Length: 245
Ligand SMILES: Cc1cc2nc3c(=O)[nH]c(=O)nc-3n(C[C@H](O)[C@H](O)[C@H](O)COP(=O)(O)OP(=O)(O)OC[C@H]3O[C@@H](n4cnc5c(N)ncnc54)[C@H](O)[C@@H]3O)c2cc1C
Image (cartoon, rainbow, N blue to C red; front, side, top):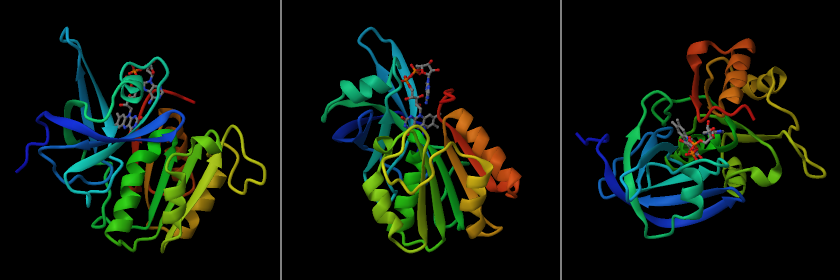
């Protein structure tokens, strides 16, 4: 059995800007283990004086990609690690990682569906791993993504999500909470019970929900899903940070 909690040295092999404040880093891993979508890696950066900072980043890619994982990092202004990963790291850099980690906020074809994914901001990252796996493994479980972003420009993975939404059984709904472009047809407010009811109702009673994002959004959405009729044990949550915005 692989020891996924041992540190190994990852090499950055590609960097892709996603939005103005978000980039995807591809990490090549000498001791790669297939992850379950929803799992994360810990990254440890160590300065020359020995000071180390450690943070968690969800795997964005599907486990069908062998030997490497994508992580997608959003800038937290004044943060210690995220600005470094966005501004300083270049292709060829190496740093310590360990993973994949996590056994609760995970989904793959064996779990089944119907699947309701609710994301706020970079909370879409582990849910994207689930959707990429769903497509790569041709899982037929119906799925729906409700994705809250502040503006259209801040939607991460937009073109790929539109492409995936053209495939069988997946519907993607956006809500833009701060500003909507002219002619916007999606939602234009914070996630509320009426919205959750609209997106969950077509999936039926057996729906399994995964909610990820800033703490406040996760709490509103998870409580709301219960109010619109989902049993608590069908709702799984992952909180990325303390922000309420
Ligand atoms: C399981 C797990 C998976 C995660 N996956 C991802 C991911 O895929 N992509 C990603 O970008 N981040 C992810 N995060 C968040 C990530 O681990 C860091 O917390 C984040 O990058 C901020 O680190 P920092 O060092 O830049 O900021 P810090 O120096 O830790 O924090 C600076 C300030 O920002 C506040 N803060 C910290 N985190 C957040 C946040 N998320 N939102 C708002 N304010 C915050 C802190 O309270 C502090 O005041 C994940 C977290 C967890 C627990």
